[in-house]
Length: 408
Image 1 (cartoon, rainbow, N blue to C red):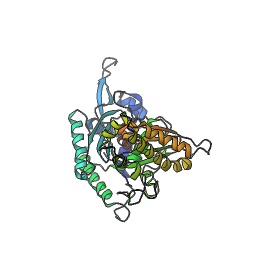
Image 2 (image 1 turned 180 degrees about the vertical axis):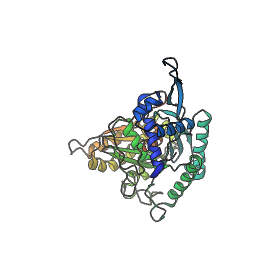
Image 3 (image 1 turned 90 degrees about the vertical axis):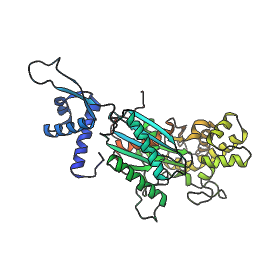
């Protein structure tokens, strides 16, 4: 069921969410207990609960036959079905597809990754995601009670872009069309879409329990993007492009960026392809992130030097935002954050140098510990908070549960 905009469908979705939230809070309930907690009429309750049972979101777990006194039909006890996927997050990154599913308690019940060639056509990239979903279903997860699908796309992308192709890259609009069509055909609902790095920023804030704080997130991988959380809200921007750190200029006479066309933007210095190219130009024959990781493990001086310079450039690009926003934390994601501590350390030391004159401006600079799941988790959080533009979801009172990892 998609998240509707208005009318009877919106009312039904609202009732479903109220009932599901009641079960999240109280566990197994009889229909009478559910009615007292949810505050819905018997007719509405019967209709909505019946639909949720048929779709698999709720299951009968017991009756009160043993404890019941007197005659009459035993009351059924209903509970959330842990096999029922309620929210689905998909991250269609440059070089991989990530899929994460949470149940009605917001516990992760499936999480899968498939590598993908950066040049893979969008139709095949989406087909890869659908293949992963089919495998997840074959393993026992059901999508009949799905409440929403969130999708992260590589930037630059904005859900505010219209079909006016003067406003955006043709490829991004085509990607949106292909993804939206595929999700509607598969699940009967339109997905919520945004850049995967902006969604990952939301996941980082949730993971660190800082949804009431300010946080800057940057992911360094095949490209560079990020997101900004201010006062517990994910900043979207007037045209939906906030967080495009990769295209901040850091070298006046640097390489030409294949994505934005400028000379010397951060992606031309600190993205993984640029770092690998710089290493090769200096005589270190690395062709892949695995090669670079091995070079780091061997303490290759060329790798250390290139990574240090890339980290410094990233720190300089972020320092202006740090001074403007005074965030609690700066989180660095992507492969380098996992295997190249020197990169994160240089980001941190450069930011510290740039903001040293302003007392209290120093944020914590940390590597992400969400791994590659941040974009898909953030896509799910965008659904949980129900903000189509991701620019003003309510923080709430802390009672809404965060996403719980598998096996927790």
